[in-house]
Image (cartoon, rainbow, N blue to C red; front, side):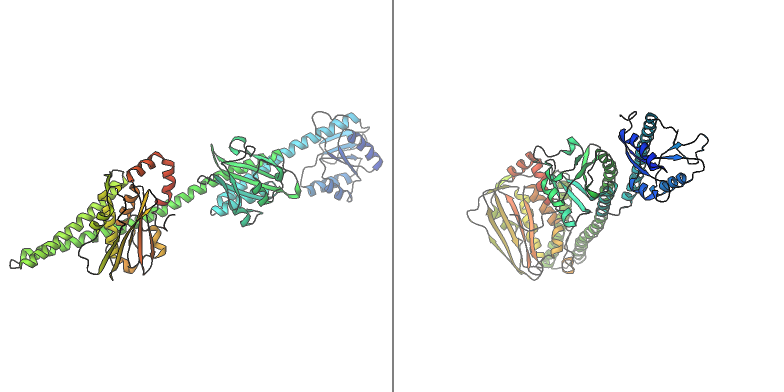
Length: 565
């Protein structure tokens, strides 16, 4: 017999004082495709009803019979669900003392019984579907609230993984985010049901994928109940996580894919269903918003920290500039007053004082020029004058004059080829490095300038001293604007924190790199990697912006690190 309407087969519990009569009704329903459990009303029926968890209960009611009422009430309470009831009234004068959904009178017609039961099951399926949606919405609301309370990125990713797995009664959950530099999805945080070591090793490459690997941008979410043999998944990831089954949905924000949300291995080895994808997609929608909010929050925190650092640097710079401008001005004024007020001042003293005034004026002009040069560099208004030049004479021109406690040793091969560079700017770089070597070697010592070829296309210039050295924790920021080594010995020596920044910008403008290797108390070696033809190197970099951009990642923070290979 075919079920009436479009009602699906269900599970019916028949409560009847006569097991024989109950089985007679059961045969009618089994013929219609239903599963049927027959039990007598009373306290003994409750365990059977709880085990069976039927869709519909059916019972025969006779006048004054309260067993059915008590049994159904207890079952509804224990099941925590509304259990539909079909009452078969055995006598004309019997009253329905139980709240029921349908009433049918004896003698029972098989066709009518089938239709009535089918109608109740259809309503129960609809009711359960509605309740499931309500539960899902409530779950999503709790999920959204939990996401909003997550403190940091790792906590948020852990919450997303756990709540996603809980929503689908899965054993494992994991969030992967897209890394644009590596072109792959990378696991975030410890996940749920996974060790931190497992999660940290999970990768889902985007480029160079096999043809049958799943493309989440094109194909959307993925359901796999046989993960080990599914070619759509990355075998290494499946093996690492030990997945038997998996649901994977993209975390999307508009057209952008932020990453993936994965849950795996349902409790009890129950397979995932298509409707589970909808649940996970709803969670993923909330998660994507939370992930983006967290990213923006981190950006704001980082920007705020940078603003505070800029404010500190600005205040420090103003203090340095004020001091460095004031000191020469006071010296100029003092010596000028001596010259003006003492008409009998010996000519030798007068010349010495005037020379001091000239030197201090030069220092002021140099400071002003450095400040203006930085402004031009950062606005892209600096132009390099490329020319063929020899390094050896340029180095000699950059060596400071009048050194008494220092010796300068140059080591430049005679066969070193000429290079194409801006001679004035490169002299400025070498002058800055040599002046620093002298200034930060207060006890004197040897300063060595060494030049070597690096392959056919580059030369390396090294300026080594035996001075104070640089603490390892301060090397990384040394080439940034206004930055100086923060130690008592270094801060006793005047400086603006502009010289090395200017060196870095000029060297990068030549398509080169600058870095330092140093040991506290034993001196420093500043190295410059310079193209033999800087004009050609900068043109090539402009024609390949993507390559230049990737190379610039290190330069952005100053290439103050160990020497490149």
